[in-house]
Image (cartoon, rainbow, N blue to C red; front, side):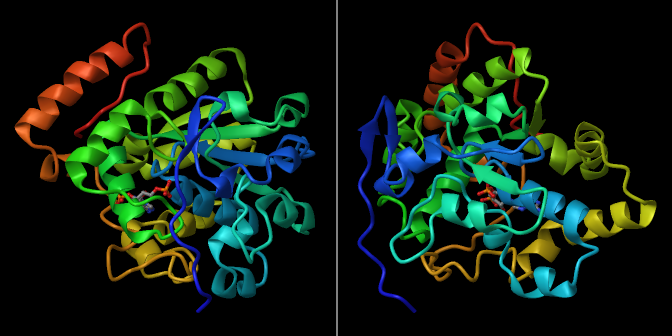
Length: 294
Ligand code: A3P
């Protein structure tokens, strides 16, 4: 085990709360050279990025040697564009060195921080969004167990900071809205919802394939659908985060619950009322709708 640096602190970066792990490599991120066949999976943290990453990795690469699936962690197969963690190669370096194509790229950047190369190259971008309440709960537990994130404090102060946008990658409200607005004028963006993936994984797999121009065999579709079931991913060492040294599984698992509506086990009636009132203000003038229960 490497010795971990102390938890990072949050600071304002051009109007978005960030930590140095996602800003230290800024020039290289902004100068990144995209390819037209790159596929980006963008999301606010905890929206299901890992889930969609694994689906895509299987769609494109499950025919390759089993080594890839058995011994290469998913976070190496799908590099995280903006990350620079001490002692590890940066996301940009990992992407530049990838030898498999298409490159599947993870990002949590708000849309206005995306390097312009992705728009110039018209790379395909899949945005995954999840309702605010479940995102807040999932992010809280993630920040408890991930020593590479700022100290989360208690749940009620965390929820306040979620509403204020004072968490890593800034405001959820601005993130989901910014990408939603961009999608209205960009045909290279597919906007997916975590809740739809939970409700009907096969249907969303179909949407993904038609967006990507893929026609997988029935057998491959079946294989993918099975391998990406929550319990199967939770037991998959290459996908469940167990190889990530910053995670403390004694505190909480990375593959935690995988449900819609777990917020009900965390929000008090008063927190819910306050949250709803604030939500209505922040989300007025948009037709973007989320489901918080199924
Ligand atoms: P919970 O903490 O609510 O369980 P991300 O990958 O963007 O960090 O998102 C993580 C969230 O997606 C976690 O939510 C995780 O359990 C959930 N998730 C990951 N894989 C999943 C799957 N196959 N099915 C359902 N949820 C999944």
